[in-house]
Length: 143
Image 1 (cartoon, helix red, strand yellow):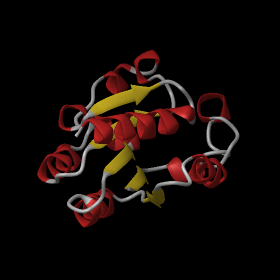
Image 2: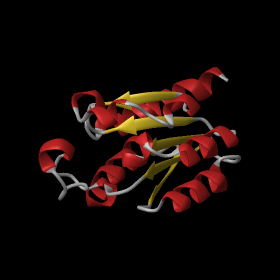
Image 3: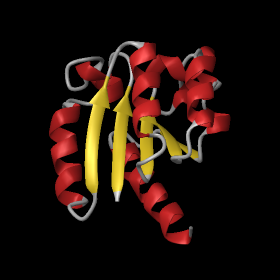
């Protein structure tokens, strides 16, 4: 199985950015833990601050990978283009957020991409990614 985790804008600063919201661990450090935990699957990671690059990555893997875990960051709430890209591919996508977006500013309460995704996980810190992988594994087992 091949899964890809995609992180959007500003998530390259995890571990240094707004630690009270996002924690003190870099994503690279957390990703190493995920690779150990899920050693039986091929797990890759991609991050970009640029919307078009995120779309290109969805197109690249969206017809050949088994699952995508996507934290689109602020693009979650604004990007119809990302929603269209998710809808256009065959690979199931799980939307994840580190923080509980419903406890934050009102603009973060809605998602443009959620309707195109298999499901959404929010508010469990970095563990949201693990829960997204588990959701995809469960979904793939039932297909």
